[in-house]
Amino acid sequence: MSTASARTPKLGVQAATKVYQTGSGDLLALDRCSLDVQPNEIVSIVGPSGCGKTTLLWSMSGLHRLTGGAILLDGNEITGPRPEIGIVFQEANLLPWRNLDANINFPFEIKGEKPDRAWIAHLLHRVGLDGFGGKFPRELSGGMQQRAAIVRALALKPSVLLMDEPFGALDSFTREEMNHLVEEIWLDTKTTIVFITHSIEEAIFLSDRVVVLTTRPGRVAKIYDVPFARPRSLEIMATKEVFDLTNRIKMDIVGERRPQAKEQPEHKSAEIVRIRP
Amino acid sequence: MSGGDAIPEFSKAKSGGDGQDVSLTNLSAFASGPGIKSGAEVAAILAVAVVIIGGIELALRLFHVPQYIMPPPSSIVYALFDEFPLIAPHLGYTLVELISGFAIGAVVGLVMAAVITQFPFAEKIVAPYILILVTTPMLALVPLLILRFGFGYTPRIIAVALAAGPMVMINAATGFRRVDSAKIALARSYGASTLQIFWKIRAPMALPMILVGLMIGAIFGLLTAVGAEMVGGGFGLGNRLTSYSSMIQMPQFFAVVLILSTLGILIYVLFFLIGKKWASWET
Ligand SMILES: Nc1ncnc2c1ncn2[C@@H]1O[C@H](COP(=O)(O)OP(=O)(O)O)[C@@H](O)[C@H]1O
Ligand SMILES: [Mg+2]
Image (cartoon, rainbow over all chains, first blue to last red):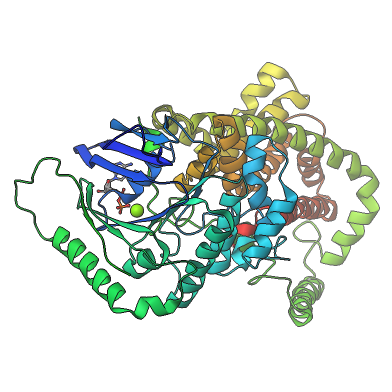
């Protein structure tokens, strides 16, 4: 591959390796995991539970250090939290002692900056939370809490949005609604999004590419292109292409879950599969 | 060691890590469930009070129980109003001891809890000593303190601080230990400093437990102040108790008891209201 002509990826994950020191010895969570996320792309990461998805996302956000390898944001190595990166955590993670307005102001308070009121009002309107600023998290449904968390993450206008199973705790209808919302926000802002999920349907509906990780230690097993135009309607989810793709990814993950033969090919490069729309 | 590595396990601990739900409103005897009691409930409580107090009054008069054994409620209330100008200064002295001793104990207890919980290793070593401080009745030290500091305010204020401080500390430490790694990660993702994480995440999370500690500390402080006043020195509500009982002025004695229990209830209500205002997010 020529490096000169290629675009700099928004996020470059280069042989990322993460070892956790635990009481019962070292635990290899990520093993030379490599992946490029292009600007304005939505990439979903799926994989068996405990395979290192969250670990990868935390490394991308600069919340913890890698043991080996590097993660580059616009070509520069990430060594700590960066304002260009917004995170949406699982279960909203709002501060229960603050109302919505104060929760959304939290990032600005930490940074000692003045909140951009017009932008926040626009975002609140976008996610349908006008007039809820004075409400406390406990007064809101799970879906509304997660909308507020998305507004909080976008308030600082990040160029990358990392989302860790953001809708895992929501019922399937709310979840579909939220998927449309993420798509709308993407159409609005073109923010690069890395989206971790355990729902293959959600991954296909939202993403340009779906990345399947191996069981722990996590590495990229396969990458699937999902070349449907946006905005996507729910109808595409009923097409044969999507049905086949869903099953292939499912088989990948199920196959991954089976006990593996001891000998794995060392550092095999990820297989890239394309389907026709 | 690698504190930054802790990835929150959301499904297990939704908030607060150790999963204990602390709340002042739950401890409240004033509110059965959320909100204020209905008019009917208040009426029933008052009716019970009238029946009990009236019954005692009637029984004491009917059986001609002498005043020095148990004065009837009416004469206690009469003594309260009649003697109040004489008791009031003593109430003031007791309040001075309570407030200054409590303030010192609370500040020291809070600071120690905040510092200790930052260093889990130090906390393990200090824990048994704190337990000794909490369980030792500080009243026992009062004769020694009087010997050293005389009969003024000083020994009493020290005793109150020694009684309140450990109570505040042990509860506040429980609060500060409720680490929620997801919330700390959130703050760190915006580049928060350790100090910002303390003030904006740890302290608010600890607040409900801190309020419980302050309330228990204040009540223990009141007990210790009155106890210390009974041991020595010529002023304070505790001194009034010993003085009235030695003169067999039982209505006045019980009037002071009434003032003391009112003080205790006021302390409780004060922290209950603060908790309702600032820590109600927990329920
Ligand atoms: N702070 C940590 N210390 C030790 N082990 C950890 C820590 N965080 C995660 N792990 C382990 O690393 C592996 C990957 O975890 P994680 O990235 O959370 O997986 P996923 O998000 O894919 O479910 C798991 O086996 C998990 O138990
Ligand atoms: Mg995870």
